[in-house]
Image (cartoon, rainbow, N blue to C red; front, side, top):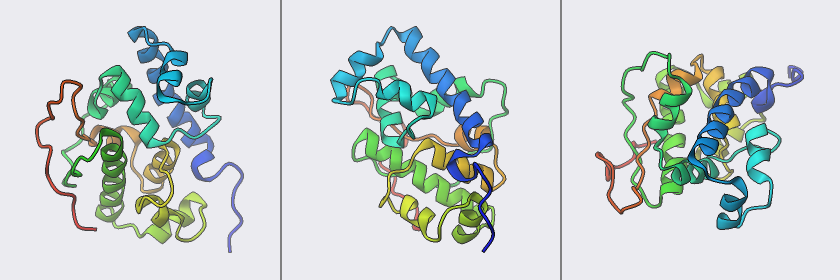
Length: 196
């Protein structure tokens, strides 16, 4: 068994630096929108100060809560990540099928899981290999991708780096559907998830 290097996994220096870029744009988007973090926290029944803790990386930001923040800003994933990675080349469209929406947050988490699974497989990696590279225990990635553990943005970033993708390549090829506030659905909603 190889020793785990300090700061490996979803808390490695590179993963935290990647997250800081995303968190900085989220902070700016919240500021520019005029939404107050304290009001959002009360609205969702979250602890006071939790959004700041998420955006500092003190507490891992679950994908579902990230979805809540995007919904409050009325942004889709692709719109948001296009702001984060303005100068990045938009990658080819992912061949991963989109997840069938149940609710916007569940759909977002499902979409991230399917997209991660697709990218791992399409790049020829095995989950056990990714777990070793990241420094996770065996089967940890399986529990994340199966939805038995909450998936965070830090988890996503750690996996993305382990499979030799840049965050821009991963997130700009991710186009999770969302239910619009007026009840309309974005184009392509209703497709079924890829077999996994």
